[in-house]
Image 1 (cartoon, rainbow, N blue to C red):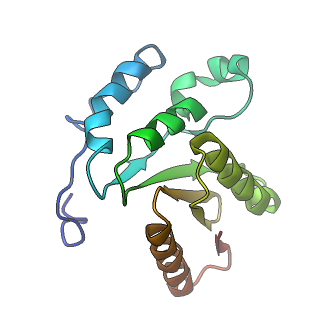
Image 2 (image 1 turned 90 degrees about the vertical axis):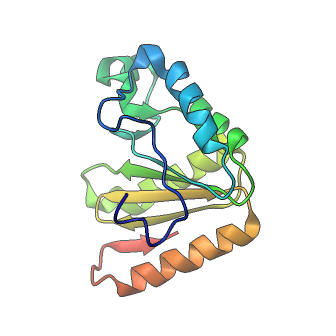
Length: 163
C-alpha cells in the first residue's frame, strides 16, 4: 500500500490480507466478495494465483490443487464485472524450460483473450515470470502497451519481452 500510494488515488484489497485464504470449495464466495472491488471505476485488478492460469484437465488440477489456478470462467466473470477504463493483471509462472518461455507467454495471452472475449491483452515477461494485462478499453490498452515497452527498455535483462 505504501509503495503504491504515490501512483493511485485509492488502494483496496480483500481484508484482512494474508488471512483471507482462497480454497477450492469456497471459490464462488471469494469471487463474490471481490466483485465490489472489481467493479470500481478505473481499477487495476491484480491477481496472483499460486501457479497461474488454468492448465491441464480437471483431474490434473484436482491432483495439483485446484486453488492454485485461476480458471477461465473466473476470468470471464472478472472481465464482465470490470468497469470502463479498468484492467486486470495476472501474475503467471512459466515452466522451467527457458526455451519455452516465449511460446508459453503467447499461449497464455491467447488463453486470456479467449476466456475474456477480449482483444486488448498484453504481457511483460522476464525470465520465468509473466505479467499478463487485459483491458476493456482500447485507449487504456495502448497506454498499457506503451508503459510496458518503456519499462522493458529500462531493464538490463536480456530475458525480458513485451507482447
